[in-house]
Length: 320
Image 1: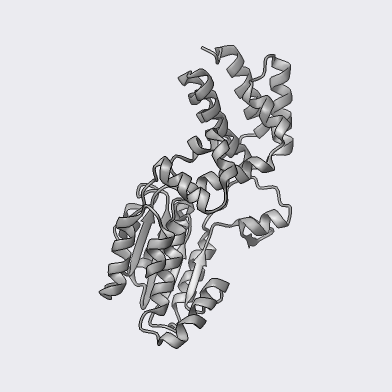
Image 2 (image 1 turned 120 degrees about the horizontal axis):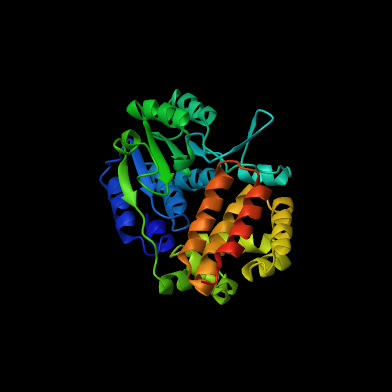
């Protein structure tokens, strides 16, 4: 269990709870790891799963178990992540990007994946004492998938299920009530800097807006930085200065619709909210961009959404 303390800086309470559940052999049928993205929930799940799978396994066999886990081919472990649906096939975010698929909506944990969990649990564990399932971004489950998971949680058999989510409130109360809750905390700035430095990501430290947006999450800081690198630099520069005329606003809307997929546009909303607040401190601007986010999530035509956003920004006098 030493990998917990070394890998999860700043998460002392979560580490202690998980360590004791292994040491005392009091594993819960289901756990909920919750907290902001990028603060170690998924890493903790992987460390915890490794400890579960190696528990009471002869030491000379543990290296093989660890190797299988890190290669993603351990027969008793199922890792479930949100997917896109394309031509009746489920694709991970990486697979969708590699295939060049334009993403119209964020990925979800789908009911087909919950059914796969049921099939996985229908057979006994092969190498260890129990099967383990991790559900990443469990908050993306629509109602049908969440209800299907609830039935699985009622009779998990010889298994431990780990739901990983952004908050307790993002899941059905009936699911939360069946899980042991493990909270993960945001980190202070000094610890964030220490972790990013250890990871060799010192370039991020020169972008205060990235550190501000990350809000105590090293993983979020890295993801924000990497997303920023994929966007046209010229477009971002022009957006941070705001359009001066209606024509400029309409041209920006065309570029955003043409060049950015749905996930990048949602990222852009967060980025502009932070930038505009730091520059202008006008609450109405933040509210307007929140409306932009809601409309994008509701599948309103993106070009129209951004046209309305920039026209309203100009008419309201964003500079206060």
